[in-house]
Amino acid sequence: MTTLAEKFGRDDWTRFTLRQRMTRYGVIFGCALGIAWALTSIEVIWAWVWGAPEQIGDLFGRMYPPDPSNLETILKVLWDTVNIATFATTFAVLLSLPVAYIAAQNTTPNRATLWLGRLILVTSRSVNTIIWALLFVAIFGPGVVAGILAIMFRSIGFVGKLLGEAIEEIDKRPVEALEATGASRFKVIAYAIVPQVMPTFWAVSILRWDINLRESTVLGLVGAGGIGIILQGAIDTFNWPEVATILIAIIVLVIIGEVISAFLRRRIL
Amino acid sequence: MSAPRDTWKKPPFIANPALRWAVILGAVAYFVWVGTTMPVDWNRVVEGFGRAGRIFGGAFPPSFERSGLLIDGFLESLKIAILATAGGVLLSIPIAFMAARNVAPKPIFYLGRAIIIVARSFHPVIVAILFVKAVGFGPFAGVLTLIVYSVGFVAKMLAERIEEIDFGQVEALRAAGAPYFSTLSYAIFPQIMPRQIGLTIYQLDSNLRASAVVGIVGAGGIGATLANAFGRYDYDFALAITMVIVGVILVSEAVSGVIRKRIQ
Image (cartoon, rainbow over all chains, first blue to last red; front, side, top):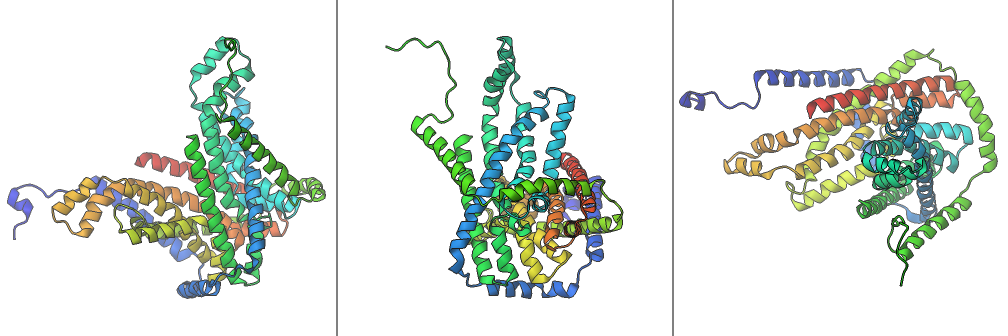
């Protein structure tokens, strides 16, 4: 049987050139090698892997039906969680303003402050909330204070970075116009810079609040306040029906937070 | 008659004065009320400053004595991240197709969306605790956790990309009588592939970070080493681990940034 190519005297269509194909095979082979390395050298007890679906099914079986008898306490602690997220976001946003100001190339007073600003942002962002929480629980003992500080320290980097980028992208002309009229440094900031970064400021703050709501649900697992504490308690006492209630409460909280933040963002942008 | 305006005032953020004052007063009332009722033990906070001094004193200089433990922990974190990314991305593809409005039938679409919402709602640490209880301590729980975490993100983004595809190509192939899988591989995959690869690299980076925290609750990797160091008050070793984590994250962020730039 003759192929189309033979019949019409031209090569069949191919998506890639030989070189492209070789690169693709190379990359795929590299990935396969990486996965194979991880798979063969990881210390896993394979019997547990095969038993996993059954174990997970068993766990969910124990959770059903959820036990709402402790709902009042759960809601109270959930409210604490919201407060931790809100307070921490507020403080973090306020603290990140000066940091963003010195970390933006066009507003920073000099090179040293620019690098100081960047150092603060990178340190804050690279350390996870939970690790910050471990540190603050060690310092201030278990409780809300450690939780608020942990979330704050993590958020400063995030908010400051995005805000700093917004400051770097502003239209320079209003700044020049105000400077030309002899306005003071403070007035230049208040009337030429702040109005331009205001929408970003609100959008970033709301986004971070939404993220912090999720993060504050786990703080309690290392002792830093919020719903995580009773979640840990319920898990430790094998009270699975209550665990289910707490998990459902967290899902509802996160979804409500997402709806609120989506609504506010639409209003602002 | 009003006097001619000779001063300019900045327009307020919220135009309606009643609403503006309600928002401001509401916010102030909230902060005062919660701020005063929050269960804070101020004595402990004050004591904390002394303790902070001792902790930082104990942490400096960072100790790299047990670097063998550190390297093992990191390699395990890397393996967890690789396996979870591979598993999570593979699983994300069908889920993303389920959750894309334009290719999935209604009931399947809702099922897909529900899977994504549940996977996204829980912080990886909570998922890790559940898996540690279900399948025992160690890296396997970590891999499962990060698979869930990857599905929540990758499937969501991929579903959005599938919803944006140019449907003309799909129709063209269908009109030519192409079977289902040819349509997938010639009309849909080429359109979503760049996003898929970008997401995979981003997720590998993100999983490497997350693998450091899921270890704190017993799911293997460097986090387990860190939590142990903290638990035994080995603050100098904990600082060394944290510094290495930060360094690795910065490097992996830079590498993934370069790769993603080259792909686009």
